[in-house]
Image (cartoon, rainbow, N blue to C red; front, top):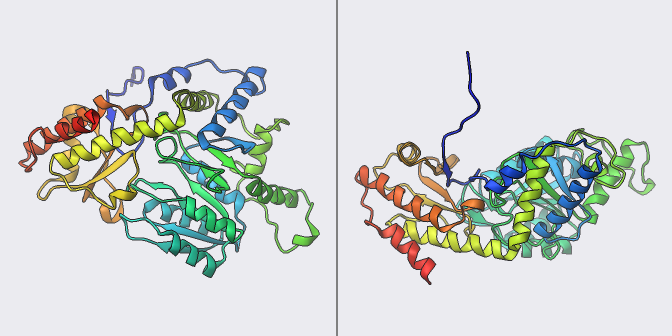
Amino acid sequence: MSLGPIAPPPRLLMGPGPATADPRVLRAMSAQLVGQFDPAMTRTMDETMALYRQVFATTNEHTFLVDGTSRAGIEAALVSLLEPGDRVLVPVFGRFGHLLVEIAERCRAEVHTVEAPWGEVVEAEAVEEAVRRVRPRLLAVVQGDTSTTMLQPLAGIGEVCRAHDVLLYCDATASLGGNPFETDAWGVDAATAGLQKCLGGPSGSAPVTLSPAAVGVIEARKHVEAGIRDPDDLARGTRIASNYLDLAQVMDYWGPRRLNHHTEATTMLYGARECARLLVEEGVEQAVARHRLHGAAMLAGVRGMGLEVFGDVTHKMSNVVAVHVPPGVDADGARAAMLADFGIEIGTSFGPLHGRVWRIGTMGHNARTDAVLTTLACLEQVLRAVGAPVTAGGGVGAAREVYAA
């Protein structure tokens, strides 16, 4: 069989992620490799760490990349912070909260949950009550759960954790760069993300930041592995279950000693650096405002078309909206028509929402006017073709009003 070079079809990725990558990020990823201990390589690593401190709004020394998709970052954080028997509390308001539960259970932690219906967030009062009752070592929470499009408030949760000596871990995969995120101000001890959403890159690298308190927990486990144990903490101390995702070793690799742990994914490093460089160049606050503007235009557009929005809009993420599929419309058939006729991808959802809602993203490189208006115009044509009662021109018109305001 003779195959030609890779030639993906042109697509506008307007689902919940991955989004269309910024061409500048792809250009950066075409740069030639250097050796992993070349001074140019270590300088690039240092630059990347400095950039992501600005992205995460933190002074944390240990801010770096885990080579792998965003889930690798999630697993690295949890497997490095948790020991068997640790109590973990997870606020669950969508699919990715359930993912945190599964990973924590695989770490053999004692997992407790506090849940909200899909389409809502967990109130700070409910979190505080659960913290008092469970007394966890770690609270693990998703900021923006794309399965429901909800954005969990974190400032109040951070205060609760600080008051009760609980470490706070946050999965910011879908929210970082497009919604406010204040690591230090909110008291977040560990946060992880991915490039493929608001950061405008491809999946494959997971930015991570760790507070001194989180680093202390991880370093203590490294000392146990080396046969050194704090006599005041003899009851604790187990090996980190993963070698590759052992953040103690990854920190040594990224730190000044540059202890060999793995061969850095150089091309992904270039891409991750460019994602952060572009965000910092634009200004993090400006990027959040851009996502807010285009998200508001998309929200107004789908409403202007006559579609019903899912969930509590007051707690919606800026960068994705979920809309109910109109009665009588084949949800997957409409998505297939968007792709086949216009080259535009929108998303379905998971679990109880599968086939009931579409998720439409405005994130990263696609948080721009032409992408929003094109998607609304094409979705209208697909719905009109199957006889759905949509308002002609209503979507584009409503979005334009947002831009004109």
